[in-house]
Image 1 (tube, rainbow, N blue to C red):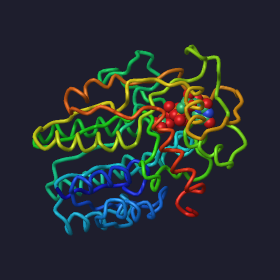
Image 2 (tube, protein in one colour):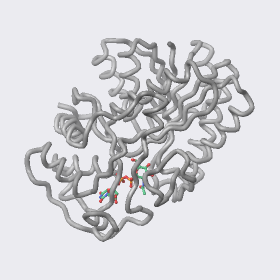
Image 3 (tube, rainbow, N blue to C red):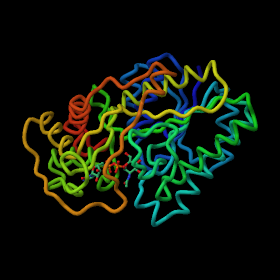
Length: 339
Ligand code: UD1
């Protein structure tokens, strides 16, 4: 198939682009490079020994977007592009609504104009807010608690309305839990700009000496060891989930929602221990105050994806840490100054 991947130079986008190329698809990537490096795509080409087409483009640029759809007749669009920093979304909500919501509307307009009916959307477990109905199923009521999360929740609603207006459409809404790890080659991985907000990239940067110690945001939660519990999922499992969803959409019309998680929760301390095993030494950490807005626990019921897509995550926390470490250790400053 010919597939358009938006945000394909980013963390999840680059790993999914690699999986798509390896499965024999033709891929066109558009990415604004606002939070990614085109070097990721050079490495994706190297690893897959396939070429891909890249175009630097912002989804707010409707003219250029229309050109992409006139140059190629796509079978499907996989849409990753968007902003994703919770804190920034709280201080700059309009930036988030414009980029994520208006950007996606522009993309959907261009798709519809070109007659493309198949769409895979990057959503997030963040749409469940701080629901304590665990495990989270696709039927758990939504209730995002910040502007970033609300852009995802709104877009899910927009896609649902769109499919209701055009029953010929096939749309998959994929709710990612906590994506971590890297391709097993260690050549592509997550390269956050500035200080990482998320746990795994921060732990990895402590391990290469970019930060002194990990701060554990609270050890007095109602969890087995008092630290926050999340459902970490290997980015290659996530990439494979997109392929399974695309496959499903080839024979089904309508809008479908799936959690992509492992179904297992790991605590902050368990993550640090697993990363220490990968690195082969202890890592410095200290308990700090809770981070505002954090919930105690979040993990998926991932049975719907298994039932409908025949997909389930196969890589465990030790493999996530080993692969994340291989990437960080050989690319201590990310793509720009790789060894
Ligand atoms: C965060 C976002 C969420 C987003 C997800 C993407 C917030 C409130 N939520 O989720 O919207 O979809 O990332 O992966 O930002 N922790 C530490 N020390 C650190 C960093 C994190 O102890 O330096 C703890 C957190 O308190 C939490 C766990 O580690 O218990 C995971 O945190 P993080 O990686 O930021 O993910 P989420 O909070 O689940």
